[in-house]
Length: 282
Image 1 (spheres, rainbow, N blue to C red):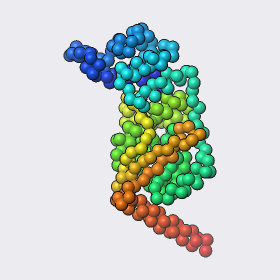
Image 2: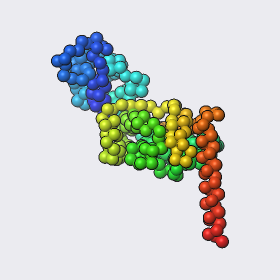
Image 3: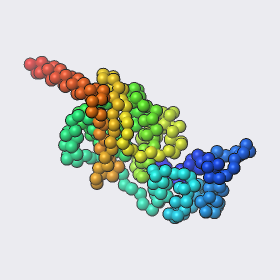
Image 4: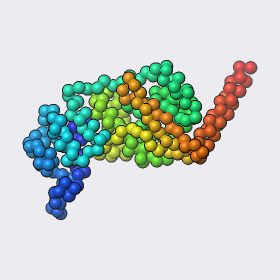
């Protein structure tokens, strides 16, 4: 699903030669750095670097990886991804299971004023509280946010910053593919997305990596309008790759009013369903 050779090639193509002291002219035919330039700047032989990009080299040392990361201008997330890819043959992480402990489900129920959900490395939603279900307009178990964003029309309408969300999703799946290269369900998901979405294929080819973290998330709900929320991600102990996500609204903000309205609409809908069920029983 992911490999060191491909990652090195894409990162090399993005380095501005002038930024590393290499003059550029109109006769330059390659985008970014040449292989021999990366080799020279990182202090390794050209032959060894070529073998790295062809997937034929032995495991590179920490010193080589550090030098390559510096030359290629990798950020912290990209550095971690590079080191992980280089060690894949030595140790492969086992994909976590899909069970959610009852204690975690109780924690979800305690979060009453914000959508909260538990998500794994494949972006499968394993569980969510009531407000999360109202936000997404569907039951939480069974939802995969990558499919929702790329393959479902409802998903594209829900995410106010859809293009930015697609970048985050692809970057996260790239990281997951590097960490769990033997996960067949992840491989199947990536193949499904590539078959069904031109944008996913284009973004995947860029080999960008992004870590899930905190930040602004905006939703355009069909009933309550724009909800500008803040997402916090909490890695769950003893649950590798699984996180608790909480989407909160700033106090006194229109989003806080929108979430209250959404709760009210959900309660009204629930009352109507219960009344209908009672009539049927009578």
